Image 1 (spheres, rainbow, N blue to C red):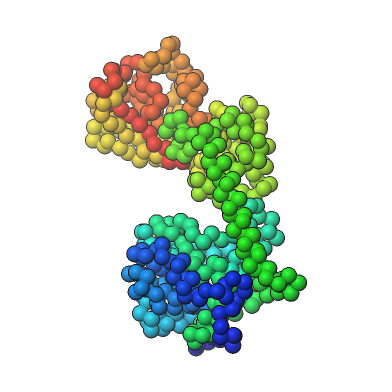
Image 2 (cartoon, rainbow, N blue to C red; image 1 turned 45 degrees about the vertical axis):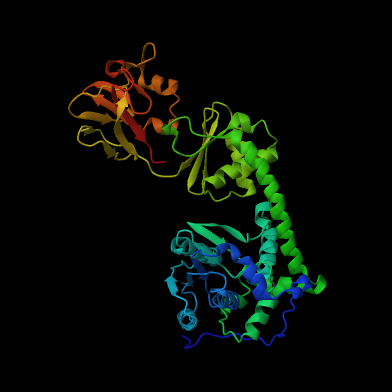
Length: 469
């Protein structure tokens, strides 16, 4: 292992002359304008020790008093992928000590998989989100050339409009925000600043490894494009801004559709996620419908499906035969269609629980075994709960011959018929708890109460079940 971090100090022009209109302002003045909106917030710098984050941290240190930065700290992610990783962390500690900036070094463990780039990125952002204080702002040193590479990389990979919009300058992150104040500053300008201020920074040797797709693009493809079309980085970055503007208009239209198409679930048995009304979805054109479904999935933090998967959602699920009950797995979730609605459920192994006794007058709420969720009672309901323990059973433990009369409804029907009449979703029917006294059904929590145990609203108890899916 090397004793010292590898240090990169290029001999560049002393003046701040990146390209175009950037020559008319100083980097420090530009940066000062970018961070005015975060005055008074806790500021955390994602500090790798490379040239970009070193310049970023130096700018903040030089401006923290005049810009009202009261709390400034740095966060270094130790990936452990390089023999130099320990010395890089030490370099960051030394520099932060000198600049009087508290530093936290967080080690992450990665599997040696083929997509180590994505794995490392996911690990970093997980740490950023966890460590960012509430109301805080994480600053990252991405610049204009990074943005251009991101746009080109995603274009070549086949990303849609969301992808080629590039990296946003500002977005939510955990309980705070992420800000990229150097996003419209060129790499040349940043390196000039580092040279002019004699900043010492590290160079990750993996940045030269062209087996990584991003590095191949940066060191091989981009220089060739630049040789033929000078200034391509700034134009790609501008293109990303134009796409972002277009995306904003599309988002506003999508949100208008979503107000009608995306609805609250009809009951707690459907879970706590919104649902999509398929009849309303089919009233708009196909492109807009795809946008609404993506918008809905994003609202529940579902990783976006690719084009092929999105087509399957429509062809195999939404447009399936009316009597079908199709299911599509998407990342850690399941998409189901029921009663003209599109429903999103978390994938998990929910199994039917065993019958047990519930001393409701002692335990107001209990966690259910097997099926998950919580069974509880409250006051001012319409159920007369008998003294003593109740039996909690599940559908397979109820005799198929059992027929019951439900309060407010005519006739006696089997459990199967009542589940259909009350539109209890198929994925719920085997795991929803039934409450009995002896051999008599008292209620199906959240659905119905039998006539023998019903009373005037407000004079009895209320039973509810909150499923965990």
